[in-house]
Length: 446
Image (tube, rainbow, N blue to C red):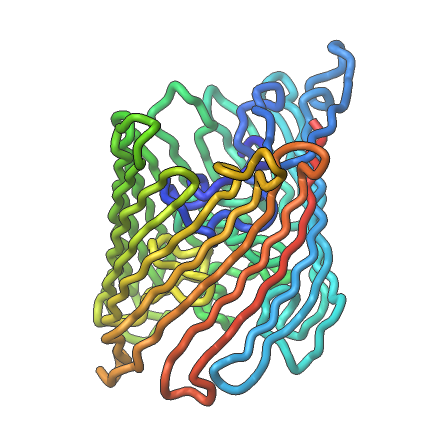
């Protein structure tokens, strides 16, 4: 994985807009073949090493990223409790150049320190479940570049749609294993990643645990995971993606997606349509739930953008045998919102969003980088798959405001305010409001 930048497209394989898949600072997805091929980064303050041309490539082509982050989250939970914390930290990452145009290393240290956190208000995932600090060497791996692909072995980020970094708190998920990934090439119509993963360090943990433990949330028989992903762009405007992973005796998950951007003149509304399907089955001795199941979630999206406005409508339906399990990263369904993914058994959902980029009309008065939006979704018909009893309908409203300038003097800064409320009968509280305030600053040395 090449530079230190990520987009919503990189994370999910989708071209469509989602305010919760392009989170906080740019993640360490390392998107370039070599540091010398790294494109300018619009949301990072870039500093240049200034090495002489005869400096060995291991140092001359190296990258270092420093991210400073502050994150406050408070939520009044349905059960009457409160989750609340304010944390500060970030990460320091280093990626070397290549020796003999082939061998290199990568490492990243992450930390999250409690600035204000009470032990009885856990659940924010900004810190450990006990509201204690996070600090770990989340990435350290060797890499071998062969043609337009790279072998990696060790602790690393994985960007494979179903397995991903889920960087929407203080620190991301990272994984331990061996992977083979394609390196970006604008002339190539496909990208891929395959690998074997033994363990995962989740967002609120200092420790790597077996993939099977992460699936159940407890200490169980150890199982690793195999995964594969392919993205293919057969023609202008059309993009496809397929992905899968297998955890023996626990879970098999497959995903497919097709999106098309209508090829229209630039001065008219731009349209994108997309559909995706996720299927999931128990495996072997059914250690995840204790009984066999097979389910799915299908979702679709229509998006229009014009004159700074982005409007989209989403819908989804989930099979009736089980909810969707997603222990290894952000969910790829289109209605994955701030708090809810609307993927309970038998659940249907419809929603829509309106967002505005102030740069379109107000960029010349200092508002370039300011965006705002609102998103509402309603879910109904969910059931408890074990008893077939109905689960009350639920609704979510999200509102956000973000400022992320791409020019001096504030380039590298990002501030974001997010507010969300979920309503559902049958709980101690009928409403579950959540507020997030994030500030981070990213510097890239290259």
